[in-house]
Length: 273
View (cartoon, rainbow, N blue to C red):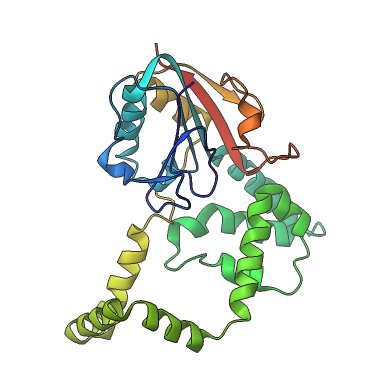
């Protein structure tokens, strides 16, 4: 089986072809997916991407899925994992009702689900408002947050708290020592543009680097887009359920102990005719 993992981040298997914009390992090939998929037609039996599609502009997503279709063999399987807009909205409505009725604990749950819905779409810096949330010494609704984000919640919390313990001044000095030419160029650009326009440039740079969500999908919109891209029989799956042979042994959507890696996900598979 030839299998392709697109935008893999740190979640990849050595038996697969793994691509990402910034490789996390020598087992990952550097590639900008907005320039297409660098393989011939009909190369793979499986194409998989997790929490990638929502980072593309909406107008680019169909052409990206058509590229996935192109590199698959006839009968090949595409598996897509994305944040589930439908579930987020349903939890938001539940939290809205319960918080409005002063049910204990639901004010905190409301704050989290609104953050989950909007923060990654509007943020102008890494981690956005989630930084303040995870910086809290006590998170009273941690079980709720962990049920939504799984190990990503712990990773983000630990990262934010580690940043708290480091010197911001020291971090700037360290960056300047590692990237002197970039720092010099930035100072020249800042002097030319002025403070306000330079800050706008920094925001634009951040929002183009791939962290933000540019669109969200539910089971209807994703299935429709897969069909429009040439796939048939789109089916919603569980994290540990797949047409892909030996799926769970790759530990892409699940951990080694069987727990779900990103519980906020919706998983969908479809087949190339």
